[in-house]
Image 1 (spheres, rainbow, N blue to C red):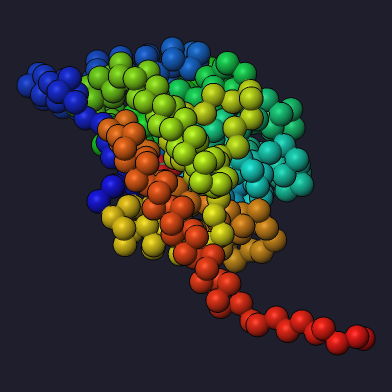
Image 2 (cartoon, rainbow, N blue to C red):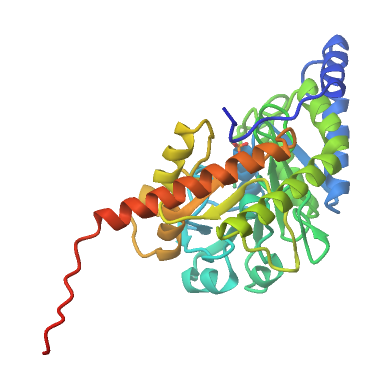
Length: 365
Ligand SMILES: Cc1ncc(COP(=O)(O)O)c(C=O)c1O
């Protein structure tokens, strides 16, 4: 089976975690602090707050911005449901927008259509590792939470994501580009926002009952994160090489490749192609030993019972995510593309057979 995603854990990661465990300091300590400093430096931010997940980092970002009941937060419909949960956790109302049909990202034009006077923040995920146009979105004058869960190391006009909006968040979940098993990080410049996030991350040793959580990262997770961060340039280079390999072979097979605007440094967290029927093709590939997926489980408008997001609906029907991760071999790419071309042709033959018979009259009208 060619897996859809796989973590990249090497001997250096194993020894970093073993050394951390052997130190006896398991809970948040100096290693977590070092990891925060390195991530903040990598995206050009004043500071960072490590968390136990990307979702908790999103929650802290909203709290840090002072968002609560009565406020609206704009989110795209074609993304991970974690965004909806975070908005609801602070008691705010999610307001949904459609995405760009080519890049799958939220655009300023789509956001403008969905804004209301109550909108207090916009969460902008860089979908599949392709940076959204944050400067254009920021020009709307509403604080931007950059969701870099899928995009660590990506750049927009040469600037790293996470450093473009008001506040940024990362996820280090098991299958993310850089993993700590579970984990996340918030990055920002505003000291008040950073203080609020850091305060709410931990409930212990506080004099008041302001709502707080246990969102802390462990030392051995940070040790893994620091080790993975050193390897990140290699991870990204391999993902880009695999994407180029996919690009060449898919072009030869006549399959549409991902759109990458020239100002974007895509990191190919996901390699997403457009096909006629993604669910059906994923089934066909699975029977041939290849795990491909629809990259978003469900559009967010489905959860809240809304309608009118045609690009998101189209993406749900046609976007198919192919295997991509550093340990994937070039030969695997060839196998995937051959199988995809075969299954796509078979599905098209089927559809032609299933189509109702068209009767053409040769008689004069
Ligand atoms: C765009 C996006 N935001 C947030 C999250 C939540 O991250 P976590 O799973 O670490 O809570 C994910 C998770 O996959 C995601 O893809």
